[in-house]
Image (cartoon, rainbow, N blue to C red; front, side):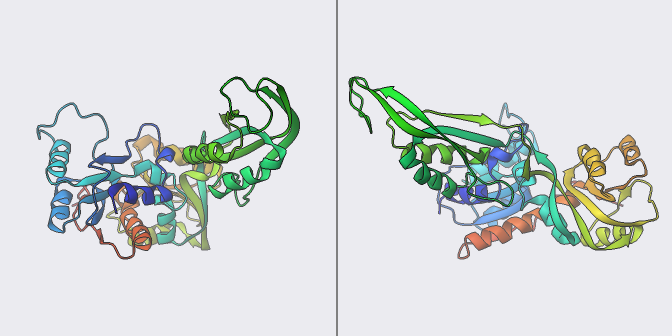
Length: 364
């Protein structure tokens, strides 16, 4: 397989179009057409991880965090970022980053936290906006259903637990084919009237290229009239954080002790315990202070996240408990998730879980 083909499999799990605008995801280093000998999965692509990849002859590193986040103006080894990139280039090793694309994925970072903590019925805490688009086109009535079926086949027309969703209105279209045209129906120089259906189908933004490719292949007209609009609807299947329930309520202190154990946390900073049982739990891997309001609005008893600042703990307002278990700790199982996924997709391929330490935080 080529690096490009492995990347395509990763995009099935976490489409890059779902990443946040500030992020830097995808193939950051390497030749997409290079043949992959082995894949090393890590949370951070650091210099010691590149050394590990060299040792085990893995020429593709799949990392969660991007080693290149802002623009590089030089490559002379002056920083850990430059040294990592230079070593990867010298040894023909590709580096692919997923970051917020995987944060927003329904089977991504936060789903894995829910799995580890035994949180049931997980659903998106902060649904992503601007992720749903609508295609509208005009097609002869006899061709409308075949076109819709082809669009459904590539993932268009999904709304929550429903598929094959579309809307159509009947009308009459007109056109006059000019010199050089090859009309499917009608004659050159004569105005033609055709009974058409106006077809509208929604789709996630990550599928736009596939949807338009199918449209142009399956639409019978030489010139296809269409429009694509971004809808205001939030995508309930994609977004940051998750919220779900414990199988049985637990005393807040007892649950925090369980979190510390299962997440291998060195310590937990938390807002005031309310000395009550908790059951509805919100989680957000990485820096999650921005989710405090959403967690409270959703009726969460506790928010598990990281990088909470001093004054942000006040925002709990004795309505829930905010627990900061550490940035690395919230995301550490992400690499296990990716190894499991890639192993299923490529069962006869060498997928290795990195053993290199990348957590920059140490505790006394």
